Amino acid sequence: PRSTLSSSSAASDVYKRQLRARARAKTGQLHFPVMLVNDARCKYLFDNVHGTGQSAWEAVTRSTNLVLAGKTVVIIGYGWCGKGCALRAQGLGANVVVCEVDPVKAADAMMNGCRVLPLREACPIADVVLTVTGGRHALRREHFPLLKNNVLLANAGHFWEEIDVESLAEMSTERRELRANIEGFHLSNGNWLNLLGGGNIVNIACGDGHPVEIMDTSFALQALSARYVVQQGNRLAVDCHPVPTEIDEQVARLKLKAAGVSIDTLTQEQQDYLANWQV
Image (cartoon, rainbow, N blue to C red; front, top):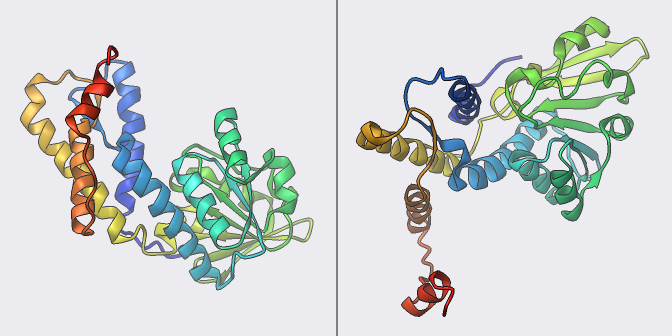
């Protein structure tokens, strides 16, 4: 299947680089200050929730020419990206099941109207399985025989590692392209499993990536954070640093201004009330 690279690949790169930077910092192998752009509010609230949530399903529906309404969609992982994907799937009329290892995130999914199940119980009822964990082999050898015929498999998390495609290929008696960006794997039990985009990030492999109205926010964060490092580099420790609040809020204000939206500000009395416990 073809791989259409787009600006949203930068978002995945940021995530991977942050993981590596944190690991390097812990072992003393980091040689310069690093800004954790992926942890900024203007990154995960917009890029992850709205960007991934919209573009992942656009890629799935465009590639398959199918609807989500009435289908059971199993989402593996309920971080910010998984939450966005669940929200959009619900809006499109899907029955959303969430699989999680984090009890807090699982409870959050439940309170947001999703059914929460262990993956082995969710596989037999899934019409679509979407991995959104940021980890490796969320969907693997033990799960494939449990999936029903013609299920759609897609990854919206982190590159190709989330679905164990190598094991799927080994288990298959036949493998062939069924449609552009859709590869069918025929198992010995007679079921066909349909993999989108070769297991790569589906909104990039099968679509246009995040909308431009999302990526402008992410790129603004990256640009302003890079400028901050250049200007403050001599004062920053060789470590991983959060994006300063003023940069996060600057990007949000620019976003609102571009949309012609104004907001309120606290009065001095309100600021004093919040800042002083004696008031």
